[in-house]
Amino acid sequence: MMIKTDFPLLTIRGKTLLPIFQGGMGVGVSAHKLAGTVAKEGGIGTIASIDLRIHHPDLLELSNKSRNAEVIDECNLIALDREIKAARKIAPDGFIAINTMKAVASHKLLVQQACKSGADAIVMGAGLPLDLPEMTAGYDIALIPILADVRGVKVLLKRWMRKGVKPDAIILEHPKYAGGHLGATKPEEIGHERYDFSTLLSEVNKLFDDLGIERIPLIAAGGINSHEEIEELFKLGASGVQLGTAFAVTEEGDADDTFKHTLIDAKPDDIVTFLSTAGLPARAIKTPWLMKYLKREEKLREKATPERAKCAGWAECLSHCGFRDGNPSAGQFCILKQLEFAVQGNYEKGLFFRGSEPMIFSDKIHPVHDVMQYLLTGELAA
Ligand SMILES: Cc1cc2nc3c(=O)[nH]c(=O)nc-3n(C[C@H](O)[C@H](O)[C@H](O)COP(=O)(O)O)c2cc1C
Image (cartoon, rainbow, N blue to C red; front, side, top):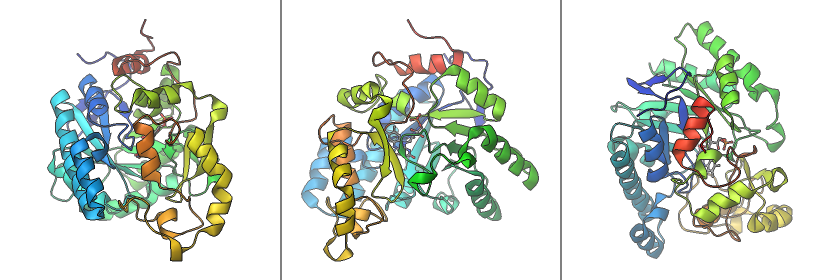
């Protein structure tokens, strides 16, 4: 039975939903178990599509042996199909979204696979998804971009509306608080006031009115960790919220328990913003590998040059990778490898993305149901 809440419910493509999105979290942090469970509760469960072979030893073995980017892509498409079907088994009538990042080289293939495998929505961020409508043409699937400011919303809306398409919802993610890759172009801009929900939500709603279109549900994301904050966001004009970190550490989260405890135990001073290999700012925990890398970062970037550069792991995962391309203006490490270590629970070698704000439950790992009940009703589980 759906948790009872005073918040207005969301309707997307005819499905009535609790206004809680579980954010897509790669690599493998939000796969079928987490997304399926959130969807079963009546919220929006999101599978992060990047490198899902990590949860499929047969595909991992096959692709690691091949050392060929096309084989790796093919294995990831099979893994995505398996994960969508497994999530659907958990939540036959639930809403299952697939998160793809525009910055990922195979994003079009992943979107098409998600459509074929029967996902309910594509959520796309880490770059402006201007061509998402073309990628999904012919499929009845909700399109949900992740954006950070009113400028981005305006550019996207104008482009999509020329094609006769409108987003089914828009996630507005605040770069100052969210985990993972951040929607600001430069690290020094993450705290800019143009991202603040106190003005952004009304600015975007006004934009809809100025364009003469019906209001599109706005979903606020980044650092949300209390029922009261959600009440406030609804008053400011949000129709829902997206949380990442809080869901990553749930019982049903698809990462290893060491991953979850590393996120739970991190103190505010342990969390850092740095430049990822995609050239975007990102937020993570200062675990041993990241501390070592940050000490050497300046030197590594100085030395970066296209002549000596190559992909460290054969996957060619990003369209533009500072390390593979020898580009000194982006990070110099293999992001896929470090994220894989993290989800597998390797504290020493992993890269652990996390939002900036304190956990809802700082004591232990809780089930998804407890998190959703608290967010929707303010009631804490015993
Ligand atoms: C471990 C982790 C991995 C993430 N991976 C992705 C991703 O693959 N794609 C994406 O669009 N966002 C990603 N995010 C962002 C989340 O989906 C979410 O929007 C964000 O974390 C919200 O902020 P919060 O963690 O403070 O709740 C990630 C966040 C975390 C914590």
